[in-house]
Length: 76
Image (cartoon, rainbow, N blue to C red):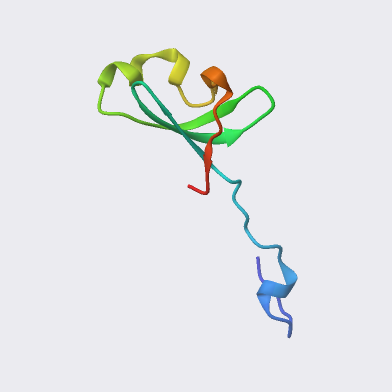
């Protein structure tokens, strides 16, 4: 796209904002994702246990509900 304007580009186009990610620790590692109504929508799994990656409960796109209603760490 070619845009001919005297105004700076940052004034014409909206900023690229990425959603805030949350980090949740669980017995097998850590989960990164977006907070939703049902729980954490998983976007990334961090673990040293290969079995965690094969568990469908922790696959990207799945919803993780924290036991006990613990708060997530924001700002990752």
